[in-house]
Image 1 (cartoon, one colour):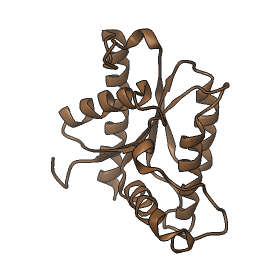
Image 2 (spheres, rainbow, N blue to C red):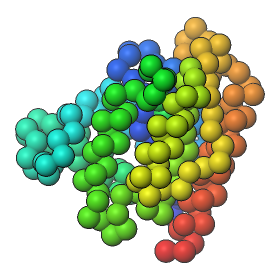
Image 3 (cartoon, helix red, strand yellow):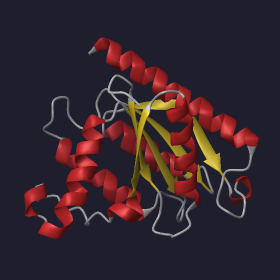
Image 4 (cartoon, helix red, strand yellow):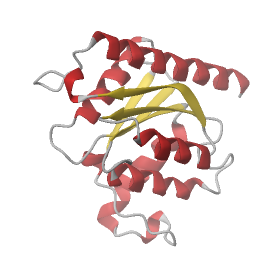
Length: 190
């Protein structure tokens, strides 16, 4: 893609080797790429972020953890829009996603701070209960919440963890369209 295209960033996934959440993100980001967007998946299993420590700057984390943390924060800073995806664990988001979002506190002194001026879309796998916690985090991080939220179930995927439900794919496409429209508007105002 090109530098003039918006960047849609997808943090999510789980620590499972075969993750429906990660598969949903792949599908959604593929839709965005087909619409001309730049995309970046921040696979939380692969990133292996350290636990967030409120008093620490990136330089205070152990050296072997700084590269993944720097990649995560730098990618969040470059994002025009984000797509968060989480399974529902005990009625809320996964710990690995919550930990990643906590690290966005490192952007509190940015201008603008946190995710202000960016759009965030939400995908939940298993149960829509997850949206409450995710939406609260979107608001606390000063982002705009896309109106469409997509809930997927195990039945929406085939045995190879590919999205196999055309209706679910249409919902993802609508969410991606909202994010890209917002990102285009944001870029036109900068």
